[in-house]
Image (cartoon, rainbow, N blue to C red; front, side, top):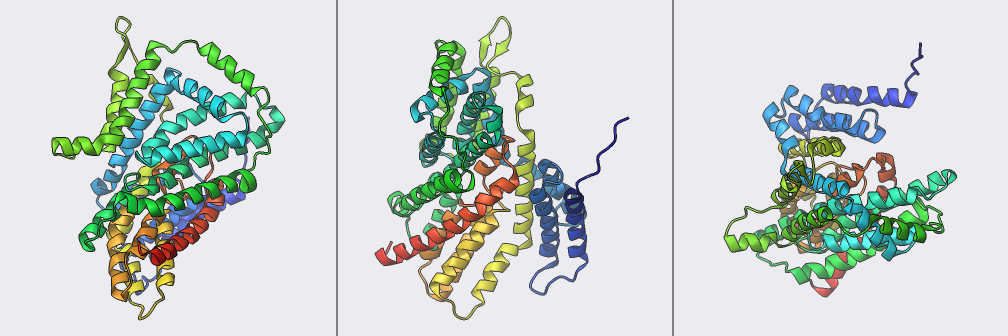
Length: 485
C-alpha cells in the first residue's frame, strides 16, 4: 500500500489563502471610494492572483473561478460570464494552434528550425537573438499574436533538436537557454507589435480616439519615430538581461551541432508534397493577416479579421487531402490531443476577469481620482498614467483597457492643460509592455502554453522589464515634448 505524501506547507497555505482572501474581502466594509460591485470583483481577483502566482492548482482551473463565482455573487449572469471563454481571441489562438499542429505533423517546423539554426550559428545567445529579431520584425507588420503562433513551433523544434546534444549534467544550463528563447519570442512580439500602428490592436484603438477626440492624425511615420527607437532599445535590454544577468545559460557552444544540423537536414531529404501544401496554407494565412485591411477596403466590409483568418487556416488543415484513397488529410482530429486546451481556458479566465473590472467601473474610478487632484506636475502625471496602464494590463486585456482608459487619459490631461499625446502615446505603448503574467498579452499566453515556463520565472524578469519600460517611455515622452511631435 503506497503512502500519500503530505502536501507541501506552502502549497497548502496558498490553497487556503485564496478563498480566505475572497471571503474576508467580501465581509469587510466596502471602502467609501468603491462601489459594491468593484469590491466583489477585487475579491475574486485576489483569489485568482494568489493561485496564479503560487500555482497551487493547475492554472486553467484557477481561470475557471470567474465562471463559477461571478454568477453566484451577482456580477454577471452565467451566459455573460461564459461568453468570455468563447471570445474571438480564444478562437484566434485555436486556429493558430491548429496551423502549428499541421506544421508539426508534416515536419515543416523541423525543416524551418534546422535551417534557422544553420543561419544563426551554434552559439545559444546567437540563436536567441536571431529569434528575437525575426519575431520583432514580423510583429511590426502582422498581429503579434499571429507572429508568436508562427514562431513557437519553430522554437520548440530548435529546443528539441539541441536538447539531445546536451549532456545530462548540463540540464539546468540548457533549461535556461530554452527559457530565454521562449520568453524572448513573447517579449519581442510584444515590443515589435507596438512599434507600428498596425502591429497590435491597442495602437489602433488609441489612434482612433486621438483622431475622434483630439482631431489629430497620428500617421504611420509619426508613430514609428517614437515606437521604433523605444522598441529597439527595449529588445536590446531584454536580450541582455535574459542572456547575461537573469537567465544566462553559460553554454559556450553547442558542440558538434553543425554536423548534427547538416545530418538532420540531409535525413529530411527533399521537401515533400505534404510540406509544400502545409507551406501554402501557412504562407497564405500570414499574407492574409498582412493585407486583410486592404482586402476589407476593397470589398467594402470588415468581414476579415485575425480570428477569421486563423480559423480558416486551421480548418483547411483538416479538409485538404493528402491521400484521397486512404482518406488522409493534412491534419486529423487525433492530433488535436496535443492542442493546449488549457491555455485557451486560461486566457478566457483572464478576459472574464477583465470584463468584471470593466463592468465595475474600477478603471474609470482610478482616472477620476487622478483628475480630482488640484495640481500635478506633467511628468509625474505621465508617470502615474503610464504605470497604471502597464500594471493593469498584467491582469486584464490590453485592448479592453485602452478602450476604457485612453479617453480617461485624454480628459485628465486636457483638464490640467497639458498636451494629451505626451501621456496617450506612452500609455498606449505600455499596454503592450506587460511582461510579468501569462494573461497579460496573447504572446505571453502562447509561449506559456509550451509548458516550459513557470509563472515565477516570467515574473522575475517581468518586474525588471516593466520598470525599465516605464523609464524608457518617460524618456520618450520628454523627447516628444522637446521636438514637438
